[in-house]
Length: 140
Image (cartoon, rainbow, N blue to C red; front, side, top):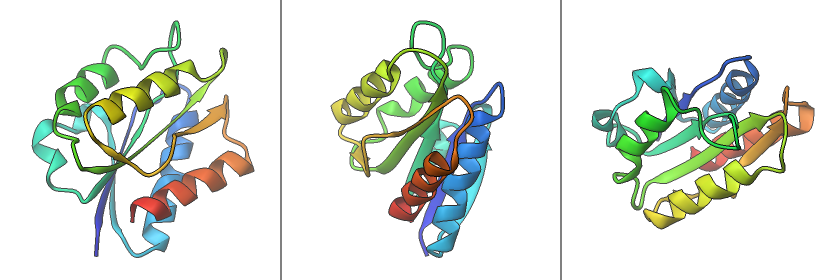
């Protein structure tokens, strides 16, 4: 049984809803899943999981949330080489540049991304939640 972590930051609940859908998808494929906030996840946790989904909304000028999520992601980023990961998040403006930048960072450290990232404009609709479940299935 694979172990999957779903690590997220949310302010409005949109990214949390996406995280729960990712977890549902992974559980449906038989994975053991743990959902954690960004502040609960550290470098020491990376090797405890076969796959990790990271969720963060776009903030400011299309960047990752800077107080909790970015410091956590920066600290684990170097450990993601060869690790099966997925990225997801919601946004309220712009065109998804933060997701493209984030994907490039993951590619740059050699992470094994299962897709190009799942985005939802504001609250995730049924289609976005279905994509999140598929992301979870792909990580399981």
